[in-house]
Length: 560
Image (cartoon, one colour):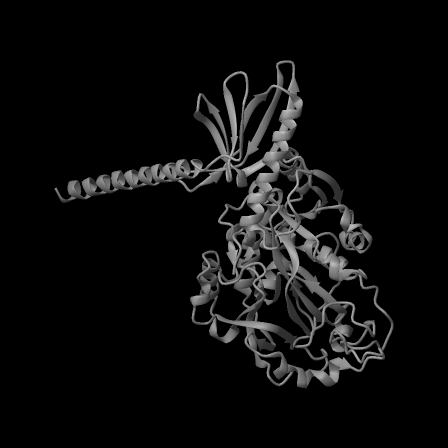
């Protein structure tokens, strides 16, 4: 009897849950109908009795004043005019979210079709819908409110890393991305990178004004190349504001995962493509890093310890995609290596005037300019030896330098660095030279670490959090570190599991601080360091954040 009552209760709860879902759906439909009642901007009725109505936030197709189809303007992919034997028609392609009874919302393709009595009228309506759609998206999601929206086709330079992820980046682009871009009417110049550093070399001279955005089809490594190429340009200050879009066809995909998470979208190539097509621009932080081989720039992540080892040592499993990180994690956890060194950082709430006094002697020098302006250098040593080729190697395409190759540079941070006497990148007033002690108001931690992770975004991979507090363009460095003597192998397995949920920061051995700048000084002579998933020469390095210096395509609500 008890069992019967138990199952009876479960069945009743199931029906209640289903009823609540139905009520939610009905409420959303009613809300949609209410919003649909706003006065139309324009309308057109054809000779067959069908009407198209353009409202402030949606476009509707009516038959005898009854709606037969509609789509929110912010969900419009593109509009096409088609002329056939039976006349001219307008096709509105949408990518709306649809509510499911037993699952979360998911986007799916749809289209609205209406016939017009003339080509000119159809062309006018095509432009009206595109402009109003872009206006709605700009007002709701664009952080910069740029130029007045137009119906002109958007132009993209698409950079594809052919060996990203499982090596199927080109196939994914052609089968999943390009069809959506075609529906949007985009004009694309596609470049498949041929060697490590190809994108970086291209960015040094490419006419960025010829495109609306750079689209990166890769993991996070190709972004590293693109940003470093841009920052080597004489016009870097303007070039770094070039908008960048991300397609998740690599292994890590941290930036794309963060953008989709913030937009409350499922992680998928289609949703990432839709974010690009929407065209809303959001800020992205850029960091200046001083390394043993000179200045580099990155936007997302830096790592020393078990996370860096997992990232690089799992390269041999690249063909299995993101599963490679699981195999790499198991191997590194079982090994349980400690990583001795020193972590130093400048707390987020530190004031510039508190830091500048201890930095001034090493970083600010008198300028020969007549107006007495000060020239700020990047905190990197002056050259004492021959110049390096300044070529950044991407570990996903060609072998990185071995630890032995960089041991001399690690021992002497001034080897192979050539620094101009005039600042060529953003100033770094919070950092001393790499060979000097950190400023007195920095916090220093000397320990044997299990891991040090640095991030300005929420995710390390699409199913792996760094911290939910971070978001793209937040202007803050989030430092997470754990000491080796406080963690067991079981702790590390639990840590990896909880990083998938994002609640790992609640574990008692995980420390998180917010910073403006940091320095990592490994005690050992060889090991692994990464910036945006790319291996850099081993040795001391430091970085400072430049809040919202870059631009990225991301459909997310504007933050105050």
